[in-house]
Length: 388
Ligand SMILES: *Cc1c(COP(=O)(O)O)cnc(C)c1O
Image (tube, rainbow, N blue to C red; front, side, top):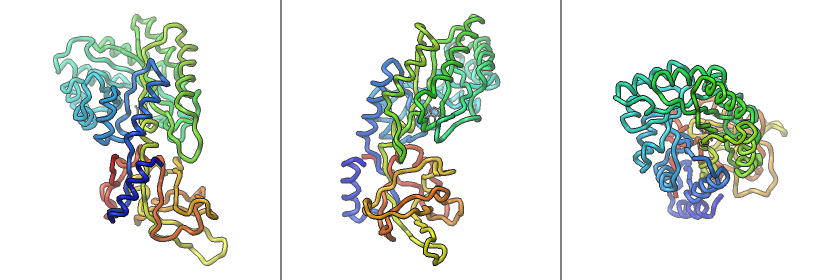
């Protein structure tokens, strides 16, 4: 909780404008996070993963600070361009793209693309030819699979190919007139283990060697995201990640350390935002003395807290009764869908005195919330965001 957010919420309440849940995002925290990444990984370019929070104010600030951007769609590319970043600072990092979207990205000046199979390489090669670009003008990097061990939100099987196949994909790109630029991976989001990059870097180094044997010289490793933000569980600082990554790079690449980039999303904006929500109902399912209390908030899985799926992300929840006696509770959202329960398997301790109408503050909600809100499921509006 920053003083700026506290003051803002108080002023808003005094004005009687506290209708419905709101996420308030403090840009000063984003600024500090960017600086910490730049300092902890000094020779690495930062590509902010736009999907974590595409608010124009966030994109504008990061563009001004010199960040690059990892995008997943033409709409995200256009948002980043509108925020003032030039096309050479943007990568199209989604491995699943329509050919006509690749064409539109090329028309916007984007020249850096992710792939994880030969069919995707062919789409890019065709689009580049159609755009009249000369051989080598478009760079591609191949994503390799990573098991996501140690991550609270693994990205596992959907993206990437095995390292042995990456060599063939990159060779294919080279033969099709694209520039085979490097290898990428993602160690899983909210990665608590600073050593998680080691295994993937060993695989990346193997792809570099295999490609070199075929006369293709790669130059870049994209280290992905995964840098955690602080929820209930303590996490290592970004410097520890920087140190561990540098050690792993040296171990696997020796004195020929490649160009590197990182794509932080959660670690850039997670702790910058906080949701103020309201207790709508507190009830029990039976009169039994030891029956668990259900606390229903005006925000749930459809209002932006989708990452409570499988109770993967456990947000810190603050109330004005903190410090008083607590009881384990089930926490649920307001919609008429029974999956709209945030924490039930593992009960969440909340103050016994918490009652209907109380406000609660859900911390660490600057990433993966506003864009995860349903448009108007059950008549509840999408999560409102205010950037200060
Ligand atoms: C989502 C995503 C990221 C950001 O991951 P975080 O764990 O939020 O840092 C980075 N790179 C790619 C390709 C992604 O899809």
